[in-house]
Structure formats: C-alpha cells, structure tokens
Image (cartoon, rainbow, N blue to C red; front, side):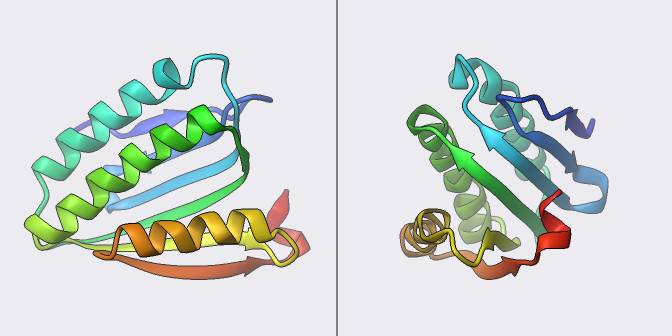
Length: 133
C-alpha cells in the first residue's frame, strides 16, 4: 500500500497519510477549486488502506484552520470511512483535533464530528503559537 503525500498549497492542505505507520496528518487550509477532484484520490487510498487494516490503532492528526463547504462534504466522507472501519474492522481511530483556542468554529465542527461519528476517539487539542506554522 502506497502512502499518500500531497504538498500544501495556498488553497489545499498538506496531506501526509503514512499508512505503514498508521499515522494520518492533514494540515493547513482547504478550499480547492474542485474539492471533489482534490479529495477523490485521498478517499480512494484511505478506503483501500482501511479495507486491508484490522485490529490496529490509527492516529489521525487533523489540523485544518479553515475549510469551505465543499471541503466539509469531503471531510465528512473521510470521517465516515474512518468511523466505519472502527466499528466493523476493530480498528481504534484516535482523532487528534488540533484547533486554536479562540477558533470556536473549528472546535464546534470537531464536536459535531464527535457526535456524528461515535466510533472515533475524539481528542481536542489546543494549539499553541509554535504549532501553527
């Protein structure tokens, strides 16, 4: 299984899905011109990885500071895949939800994810200024 690495741009996040180490990272902002085109290969790769993985601890470090509505739909698809894998493949998915202490919007979205996808082990983490680079 090939890892996924996509470099951050001004409109899209850095995606570093290291499947071999079971660590998934997404950092930056997400408002690509076509969110479906951007996220499609990520979702396909993640789905293949999760189908081949069971009884494993997977850590997802989510650190987006902004995402638009079309990205939100794609992120819901991503969290749905993770939640399903936790419920059916006995995977433990730790969702480290990094957010700025003053950014209620990102935190509230994370709390909605926690409510909607209860198989994910949601862990809110407040960023300090050194982490935000």
